[in-house]
Image (tube, rainbow, N blue to C red; front, top):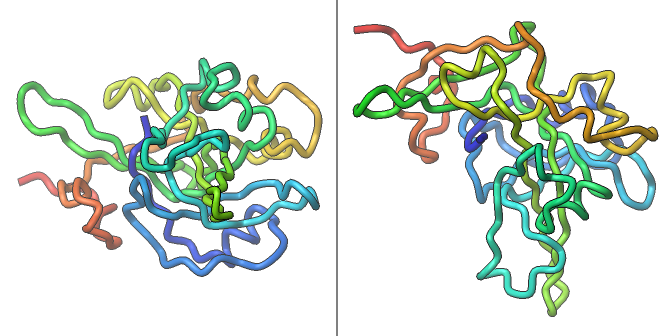
Length: 224
């Protein structure tokens, strides 16, 4: 799964990288984005077709949900079922998105002891783009909540020693297809990252608490 990530580049930089149009969101850098928080999402505007960079809430609420308080709000969608699951299939068909990140975190179980956190980033230093889905939910009073989930798939060889799942990473040439800007089979992009795409390093346990949020969270763990 993917339950925490870092997104600390300013919106201006993300807009240039992903070639978005329109106003930019006002968001502070975060080294510990957690579920229920707002984060930057690149999505195709449903009316203009342009790429927009917007703040959406992590934890997808389907548009057909009746009661926001009872909604499940999943943070991840499985690649194997995202196109067919009642929870995600409408968003998969019409509202695919990219979630920019500079790194993400995963926890490895080591025997009976506490889990060891790891940070994962691109080996080439470029920004990650997770495959995502977004939804717009409207309350009876007209309040609109826009939310997203990150699609996860089987781990590649780099991730497998830590966890059996990883986020789907969309490479730059595939982003027009994923966003629906060109025709094609979007489901074909839901696969593990290629070998040697990622690097992994252990980090300290302060990342376990979402309240901890600074660049030191990505510092490599120094062995005692």
